[in-house]
Structure formats: structure tokens, C-alpha cells
Image (tube, rainbow, N blue to C red; front, side):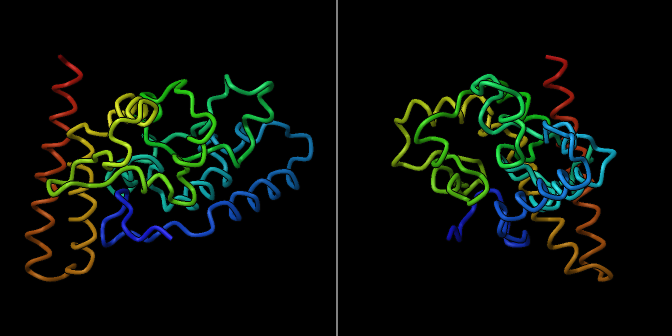
Length: 215
């Protein structure tokens, strides 16, 4: 069991029984829509209860970087094919719920058609937490590659393509941590001050993203 997952702060619940929950969701979709072949088409549609259930399986957090819907709107989250769709013979196989993960917009769009194959399907597994054996948070909360994998080309390719070292990953982690503490202090003077600090940090994050988009 992973006890130090870089995607979580001390206030975040751990992922539990993700594989079993995804199997149950696929069965529910097949029961409600017997003719539906590509599960992705139902899961990624934000207007369905299936999408909401899928998000809840991941505690409404990105499976790759850990950013939460507590600090980003749900519209900035997408359903990603963990193993790229292009690596499958047909869309039905690629679109099975077991191959889908919840991703923030930034991770999903950066990842694109990155090919996770062979042993890396297991090593980068987001559902059972093995991905947390590869990456960690340093003392300044940046996501880093663990020493055992620092020279691994595939791991570095994944890390760089998803831009996991990006400044926003650090700011998002700090915001999630502050949000968690705020919930504990809600209704107190300290909680009120923390709420102001959260708003300031949120503006800083958004301004940082806006400036990068202009560049």
C-alpha cells in the first residue's frame, strides 16, 4: 500500500478499490445501455450520472498530478485513455472503463498520445497508486522523479510531456493543502484569515497561467 502519495496532501482521502469501482460502473452502464459498445462515450459525457460517478471514484482529483475539483472547476477535468487509443486495434477495447482515468485538462492535453506500454503500464498505474513509487514531492512541493528512476527515459518522457514539474503543480498542491486546513478551521478567526490567503493564492495561480498563455 502506498502511504506517501505525491498526489495527496494530509487532508486528501486515499484512493480505494478503484479497479473494483470501475468494473461496477462499467456493469451499470452496460445494464442501462445494452447496445453501448464504447464505454468512454458514456463516461466522458459530463451531463451523465456516469461521469459524476467516475469522478467520485478518483475523489474528484486528477489521477496524474492530484489537482482537485475543490480548486478547479469540473469543466477543467477530462476522461483520459491511460493507454493511448492509438495503441488499440479498436475503440471499443480502448474505451473500456478499466483503461480510463480522470485527468485535469493540463495533464490530458500535455499527455496526448504518449505511449505507455510494457512494464510501464504497471509502473505508472494510477489506480493502485504505483505511480507514487515513481514520483514524490520535494521540500518545496514540486513533483520530482525518485532516484531509482532518474535515468529512465520513459519515465522522464512521461514526466516532461505532462509537465509535472510545472509551477502550477506546486501552487495547486499548496491550495489543496490550504483548503483542507480551512475546512478544519471554518468558523474561526484563523479560518477567515486563511480564506483570504486562499483567494490571494488562487489569483496568483490564475495570473501565472494567464501570463504563460500570453507568452
